[in-house]
Image (cartoon, rainbow, N blue to C red; front, side):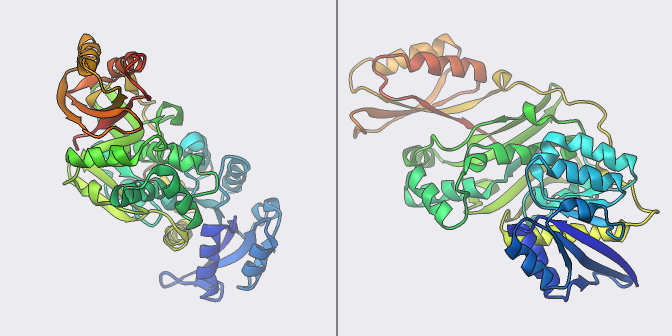
Length: 431
């Protein structure tokens, strides 16, 4: 029986799920014959968390440096999140030739190339299944079973908080702020929800997915992102009337012209598989040249699903934590080059536009003139008879137009005296 000793740094929501798993098994488990994995040490600042860890028989520490210096530890699990000091802890673990498991999508997105270079240099590996999609197995398939594929697109609903909010707004006609407050009360949203509702969390995850799908160095700074805080129940209702639903979609596309990476509210057809992903669930839709379309769907967050993904990575790390198996990097090899990123301003797509205008003649002609002068043609117009806040809501769907032209058109439209509130635009994606 070969034993592998594991140390956990960070015993928060996901970390406590890992501790619970080991506690139910007296601090150790054997995933395959001949291998025993032992939770040797837990490090956290919380005394309550350390007491819970001590109850399952492992050593507890308040200082991560003591854990990292322990030569008996072969696998280090980092679950504290954020960039610092997580980066320093992982680099130190790698320098000491320990395998690393992490769920830290922000760190991987912003500093991943440095971390994987350090892993290669020290002949060890980093496992990060829980960084994207919670309990959904997506990283390992991309690193292993799907490597032969050339992917040209990845679409993801990868933030459960935003998807829960949009689902509630669509199903019950509620506006954004009350649903956000409810999500916070139910534990689906942080007290500071900025990372989730402004698209930053999804952009981190898209960076990781794009690095694996497209095999290029992806800089997080090159990912365009917008959030959902400006959407209203009316926009979601009007989109439904037009045959669409609204999702915060992470989109990556590769073509001869470069790679586009963007996260933003998106209209998608109601009959697409992603349109049926509700609540806190996540889904990732891929297209590869060998396998065609693939959909990965499941619980994208939460203590148990995410802890399960971490434990799966611990098992993989333990199976390879010896001198003959290190340095494989499981599909994360040095990228050939940095990706050529297509600026969002150069992209072409269709748009949903809603503006609130004074109820007087000539409004449509003035708006249409601005759009036409920038080469944007109107596909359809939906005008509601009943005014809202002393203005008439008018919804337009456009034909394909260039993003920079649409941005200019919206700036000009919003200067018209007949426009009462800022115009809302949502991009349309034909999946």
